[in-house]
Image (tube, rainbow, N blue to C red; front, side, top):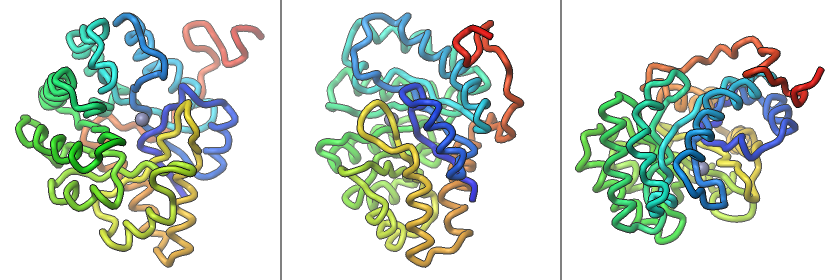
Length: 282
Ligand SMILES: [Zn+2]
């Protein structure tokens, strides 16, 4: 079984996770830039983080046989902090880099005017740089947030078919599917979507344009949720081809819109900017 996790924050995860993911079938992933839990106080913090998502993290993933790509953006939450918004002006020089396969995560957190500006600006950047957009939908007030997101996408220059609407559930899947965008589902332990509910969504809505991710980060989350959904699909009578479509071909097709996916894992390098995973020392 080959698995592509289209949304996982490996910066927050351990090498044990990389090993366990590889053992479960994960061969490729996309790491969206996001909020780190603690507020950043200057744009420079973003640039070091973006560089890590383009350099150190793919280097680390390659040690474990996994192809790593990223999406870059000013995240919805920090779009509200005027100390961080200059990132929007610097973003273009990052969007031309090879490892970037979308603009993201963008979208709404609390649906403020500052978030409106950041979302519209970054959808425009995606259109200008011929990249798809990875759009986070709010965890609170989900349907209102989703409908407003779809309206902003419709008013943008970006084709809805180049947009992935993420963190969907049973209440938002219908509107999201009608918008023509790709449908992302984040599977969490205990809260929000779980694997059995995901299987029901797949039964009702089919497998077209559906992506499943673990969204694993620094919070309670599970980097093996993609595999657990695959196993739940097989147990529920879906075919191996259905599993391959949802867990591999769909994410490849969506992020392939960037023209930048490199699914052959590069041979592991011993050093990244002079440092090894042995903490600099032989
Ligand atoms: Zn995320």
